[in-house]
Length: 70
Image 1 (cartoon, rainbow, N blue to C red):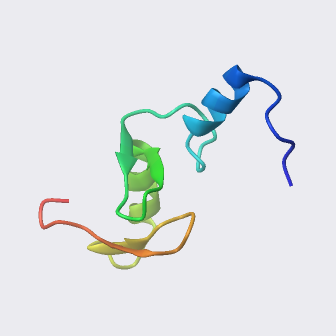
Image 2: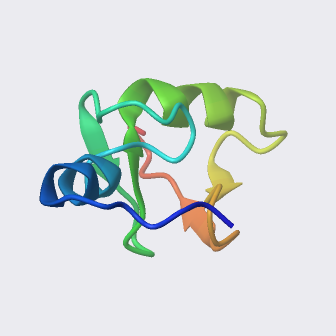
């Protein structure tokens, strides 16, 4: 288990970081389950999925359906 952030700045950085790339969000996208990821990280994740119209959230594995235009 990771150590708890010790300062307010560290807590904020943790909240604003993508759990895929571990960097601050770049063009953040929120999934219906409430998890947020960088747009590029999600595109990479979906690209690795066999079903391009649906994929599972990398954090909670909830099924996410894409709109017709993505």
